[in-house]
Length: 182
Image 1 (cartoon, rainbow, N blue to C red):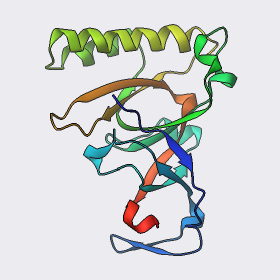
Image 2: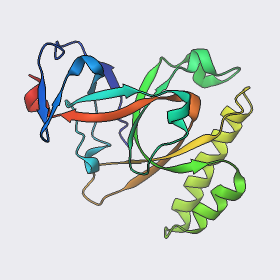
Image 3: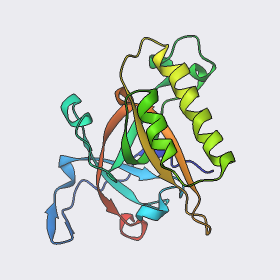
Image 4: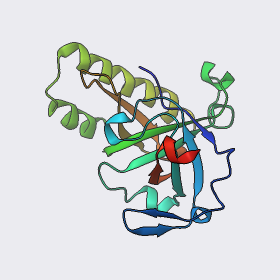
């Protein structure tokens, strides 16, 4: 699956005002990122689009509504100890929020409600186990946020991922189409 990494905006979109769905939006109230990749195509976020991100505080991290598009900032160098991933550079990921997973019982209730093939269930269990192994055992007592990312494949493939709340950077409030980015 192709991820949806982001780059901090280098083009100057901050000098204009946008009318989005009847709302006048001042880009100076947001951080702007350019999307790279198409894994969020099912929520109409495509490669080359600009997203206006509102940074989220600790209270907001605990009050996310289902289907909100989230931006995670993953800094492996800073946040992981004794892990091979520590060598990777900082990266940004977009994910569509499904729900919080606070413990194994909640995870098992959720996964038992899915209607997937056994190999897909095994893959999801493996990702969850990896998340717990890496993040819960690296001085991170924060819950993992369960988030859903989607690919833009013709068959509608869905990929699930788990991220600790400490990596949650903000919410994607607005999307500017690549054609309007310039």
